Image (cartoon, rainbow, N blue to C red):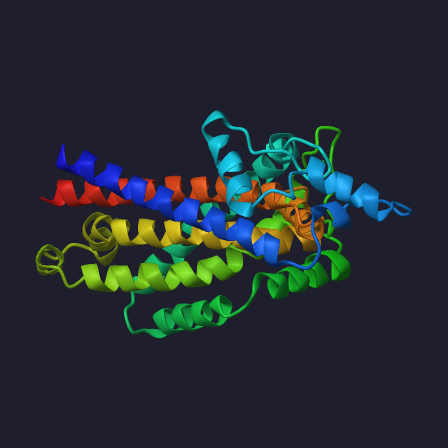
Length: 312
């Protein structure tokens, strides 16, 4: 019961933070020069036409009132209407799953690579492999996603022709081939792998000093068995927390990467929404991204609690 109460309080806290973020999004869009009525106006429209559109979009109403109306539709899944008259839910119904697919692949690759490299380095602490892995991880961590994306396009597309540099879509709006997912996924994975390798290596080093690990070493168990059966299980909560943090970074980086590869995700939707000063669309993207990040963070908390309970 205390664990459930704690999880409920944590969920309420994160929901309140998300609501505050959404309010900030609405206010920030309001501070941009121009408004949605003017940004979406056609050539030749008069000032009276633009003012009429402003009234239709409700832009003549106070921002708090518009924000409250938008928030009141969230429990029913209504994300409002875009500045061009389309339901925001319809705009994101294909784009957001595509981004989740890309982010999910990148997160899976990040988890596998970071744990594998961190464990490889931990088998020889302080050795040449450990120093090489840690140094490479630090260098990769400093690379922005767009730099990695451009380098991948040059090497794997333009120079070798192995992979397509641009994403083509089917009639349903999804990528035409799995090969078109490779470069965007790698562009997201590489920087996050650098971040998580350092987390994994530090977590394994901390756990290696635990008494039960020292006992296992004194018992003469092979290093790989000590690592997989005694060190890694205790480090999993920290590793899970690091991967959960990467979820937000992956979704944020996806906006840039999707633009470079013309990937049909929320990147293009968000770019168009900013151009149109479209508050409901921007807030809709923020709300869905925040919900995904919150769910992953709660899952990481669950892993941590389960591991802590098992060790007790």
